[in-house]
Amino acid sequence: MESSSLQFQDFTGDSAVLSSLIASSWSENREQGLDYTPEFLQSCFEYPGMSPALAPVLMDGDRPAAFVAAFPRTLAVNGHTGRYALLTFFTVAPEYKGRGLGVRVWAECLRRVRQAGFDGALHYCVDGNVSNHATVAGARAAGYSAQRILSIPYLRAFLRSQPSDPVPALDPGRAAAALVEAAQPLAARLPIARQWSQQEALWQCHGRHGALTHWDEASGALVNGYILPVCDAARTRCLFLDEVHWGRLADEAKAPFLKSFLGRAAGQATIATVPLPGYTDPAHLKAAGFRGAPRQLHAYLTLWTSEAAPVEALYADVL
Image (cartoon, rainbow, N blue to C red):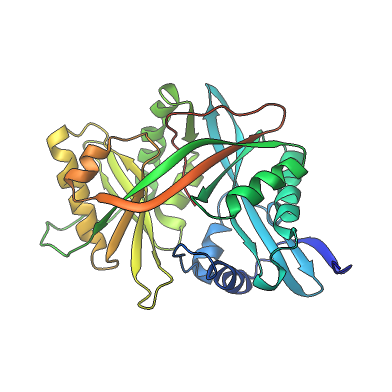
């Protein structure tokens, strides 16, 4: 029988408790998870416009039983720019699994997202994970339809330190402005494309824990990601590329530019991974040393009054 003490509350901001909850829950997944440290999670909740009300926790007394967070994003969807929520960090404590609490917390989060005036929600699930079913069921329980719109493969590269020219110190404000500019044209050629404010881009390039950005002012080329350990025995540190923008670089200069970035990361990580949602040509990534990886994500879009249609590509961050 379900405990009568189960109640929703806003996220309190205790990133250490959330980190422990995610680690204990995701350790049961067949795919290897990430070590979402308290420092990384805290920086995520410092994203511009994020509110504790967008991160419901289903509590059993003083124990967190289930959790999900919805981070604000601005997306151009089929030419219309609106506010969407990126739902992530979906977690059910091990002792509460199999009781439908994941469906409950997901439905609650979507209701809060709509009440806050968002136009829809985007989320990702690893291929084969039970979350693919739970999140769709949670959307249905809230009265909406979560539609799978794209499957996203990955590439990965093993990092090795190489001699390179000195890299100028990053000017975070100017790099952020470059990211804003680089992303704007994507809305004209993609059915779903993220758009940035200067504050959001500054968080992306500099404010997020583990952020690493490589920018060439002359060409406008910019790559960005973050570094986190993997939950393996060695706590292998991995670079996750979010942003790949070539600017005005000639084709023959793209792989060397990316290799320069990977060389910078090699002192901090041993593996790099990048999702392929279709907004950039993977040939240049492969020329820089990336190869196929045994990982695939499914992207889902939830709209309030209609069903989303499949797309061939999108530009939005994976978190």
